[in-house]
Length: 268
Length: 253
Image: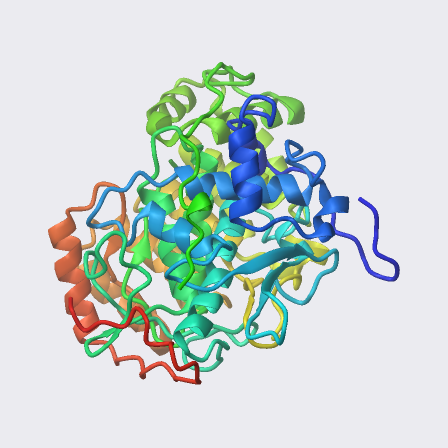
């Protein structure tokens, strides 16, 4: 990958989970409608993606292709079991999309060829400019702990939820303290039962009774649903990743303890 | 609000269905190259075909040799590609060979910096506002603790409980506690045992219901509601502006 002057580059390459997902996706010549939809729906049109594989969207070893693999999971993987699934596949997908909808206004997604200090970051309320989400190297770096198509998809949901917070007029920063591990920031978890948000209603909220979502919360609920309520064809590697990432965040990134764990502690 | 309906719905799902090598079943892996081929096949297996993974591994002969091949992979520091390393842990768990107990324990207690090398802190720094971070600590060790407990199959409780008590990562402590309960049929006595040795700050996270694919929805809902009722409520989210921000607000549930 071409480096931006003076900045460290992302580390290209495809890990085992990306490989398992990418091999399912037909190439653009076989399925042009998906690739054009993904590019438009997630506003991957910024020229920052050009040196990151935008011209070779089938290459799952480059950030653009890796993002496509994550969008594929968002768009198709969860089977919609209804209760006890937290939310519908279409809810997560609508939230994550960059196009304006009941969740948020329009934004676009940039690729940032540097570590950024985090996995991704959202800018909201920009003056005379479109809001945006920046994706940093950690979610693409081969060998890194965040380089995983499921985690990347959950990060897209997380960052989109910052746009939801802005759209609804709520504070969008994170916090520390409580049960949040000192090495990271986190959120409150606003407990709700499965079924409290009907499918198609994730964008709504209520203050009395308190039915609300923080970014890490909706991210973990997506991970839980992908881990346990995926279609039969979703690779085992992807559902296992969803469980690992979800449970790690549940343990370390919420101020209040969360009253469930994802999955059973079995090998397969 | 202006909604862009053109991109509302993705095109109908498609996937490559022809068989792409490697796929299960495969013979037992004898060396590093064969291990990678085997891991790729396991990783790509659809979640609906998990039984194929179990039966393939159950049918292996020379299981100690297969375990030894996996143990060499688990000894790598840094661990290399995380997804591959996690899959080795799952395969070792499924093999369920006693020779794996020590290697799994070694991974469980390995330092984050040793396992992750230069990736240790990437993506997890206290940064500004609307960012997403992932903690460096505990994910790999949690899976190792689960697989140790699986291979131990109800034995070596003292070593599992030591993880619950003393591991530096809360994620790993909670994973070990959950695995301990799972292997003791979530009994009241097991819960009492694990709570007695758990760190006070961890106790609320132990014995919580598992959301899994075949859970009884009513049982999960009841246990979740009961636990939530005992949990301190989160404060109201902070409103910061935007006059139209109440769109979506409803009290109807």
